[in-house]
Amino acid sequence: MASSFLHPSSSLFIPTSHSSTLRTLSPSILHSPTTTRIFAPYSVKCDLAEPSNIMNRKPIIPVLNETTTPKFMEKTGNKNGNRLKLFSGTANSALSQEIAWYMGLELGKISIKRFADGEIYVQLQESVRGCNIYLIQPTCPPANENLMELMIMIDACRRASAKNITVVIPYFGYARADRKTQGRESIAAKLVANLITKAGADRVLACDLHSGQSMGYFDIPVDHVHCQPVILDYLASKNIGSNELVVVSPDVGGVARARAFAKKLSDAPLAIIDKRRHGHNVAEVMNLIGDVKGKVAVMVDDMIDTAGTIAKGAALLHEEGAREVYACCTHAVFSPPAIERLSSGLFQEVIITNTIPVGEKNYFPQLTILSVANLLGETIWRIQDDSSVSSIFQ
Image: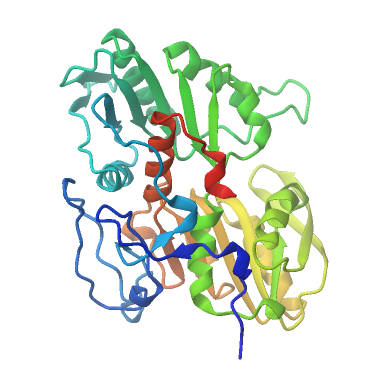
C-alpha cells in the first residue's frame, strides 16, 4: 500500500473550527463535477470559476472551501483592518478578489482607464490618507502595460497621502534579466526595481522570484513568498509512495529550488537535466544526471514560458524509463507554442498557480490551477500586524 510522500512531521493540514477560517484546497472535491460555493461572513462575493470536469476535456481547477486549515497558513495577530486598504490593477483582478475574499475585506474603489492613444489614467475613488495601501498587480503579459499601470497606481496613492504603499507582485516580470551573461546587455530586473522604488513604493511582496538575488535590486524591504506549500498540499492528495518519487530540476540553475522541494517530499531523490541554451527561449537537452527508471518524476520550475525546456526534459525522462511525469511551476506565462507542447501527452499533469491569469483558450485536460490567494492574504495580514512572514514556510 503506497504511503503518503509528505513526512508526518511536516504535515500541512490540521483541522480547525474557527468561524473565519481560510479557504483551502480539499482533495475530496477535486474530481467532483459540481461544488457548492461557500462564502465567509463579512466578506465580498468572489466570482470564482466553477471546478471543471476533466471528462469534458477541461482542466481540474480546485476551489476554496472551509473544511481544513493548512498549518503553514494559520492566522496570527490582531486582524484590525481599519487602516488597511486593498486595491487591484487590471492584470489579475480575479486573484485580487480572492485575496480580498479571504481577508474579509472589499477591494478599494479605483478607476483605471485608457485614453485613445493608449495612455493610462488612474484615480482613486476613496480616501487613503494615513492608510496602509496594498496594490495587487502582477507584471505579466502585456508586461509593459501592466508595469506602467502599477507605477501610476503607486503615484496616485503617494499623492493621496497614503501612509505606506506595499506593492503585491505575484509575478515579477523582467526577472530573467538579472545579470550580464554577454557584453552590452542590460540588467532589466534592476531597472524595474528602481522604477518601482522611485515611483513611491515602500515595500514589495513578490512570489517565487526567478532568482533570489533580485531581492537585492530593491532599496526597500522585500517579502519573498514561496508557493511550494500550495503545490505540496495538492500533491499530498495523490497518495504516491515516497519510494516511487524523484524530483527533477529542468536545468542546473534550478537545482536549489528542486532540492528544497525534494526535501519536503520525505527527502525524495533528486535528478538534474543538463542542457545547453543556444538562444532565448531555445534549449537543447543534453543528458540526465540521476536515476528515474520506473519512478514518478516531478519536474519543478519557477515558470513555464514557451515550455521548450520542460517539454524536452519530459521527453528525456520518458526515454530514461520514467513511469509518469508531472510538471509543477508557479508562473504560467504560456507563450506560444507552450499549450501544444504541454498537451502533447508527455505529462500526466501540469500543475500551476494563478499568479498569472490563464484564459480558457489555454485550458487543456492535463492542466490543474491552484490558488495562492490564501497564502498572499495571510502574508498581507502578517505584514500589517508586524508578524513573521518566514514562519509560514517553516
